[in-house]
Image (cartoon, rainbow, N blue to C red; front, top):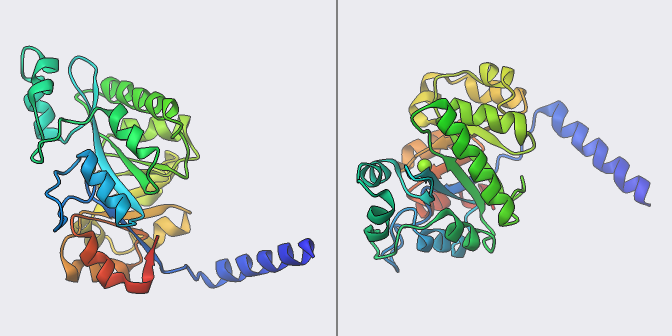
Length: 263
Ligand code: MG
């Protein structure tokens, strides 16, 4: 019986790969968590925004991981971390900084404590730092933090980064994870040569390079697109065959996808 089921599964898998028939389902990633909720005034990258993404059942929740000048890993977007790091005491500056919803800036530890309970895939953006060495140092620290929270698991976490050095480090040291480069300046074949197994590009890059989605899929790579908030462009990207859409408007995207949403 088991052999019959296995055989049937193999035939089905072969048929799907021969026809090139993909599931056509598209995942939604809430950009910096889901913070444009009507019910709650969240702030992007807040713990509340991750909780909201989880409560609404989105496939993924994206967040930005930065390191302060004095070595603290925090969930905070670029310009705000630069303000913190420009102060004489980044730690003191960070401690007084609150997000728009009044929440303190989450440490990566507090974020991952909640993330460990979340059903969302954690779309973990390792922010590019000033030098390649620093970006790699931050990447290593991020991996250690994930291990400490029991989240060093390709089913729970995918990595995205504008730092090519971070992507290359993940490719060499955590090859089972989905590892998407954000920069938009490399073709799927170029990424594949460096063992980077995915891309997450701005929609304008995919509009300019319409063959890249098919090229990436032929190489077994995943394709995400950021950050699409416009209904017409969402529709265009769905038809173009992306696997995942990152958006500040996940409910709109859900409405457009209907039964095509991958959860
Ligand atoms: Mg981000």
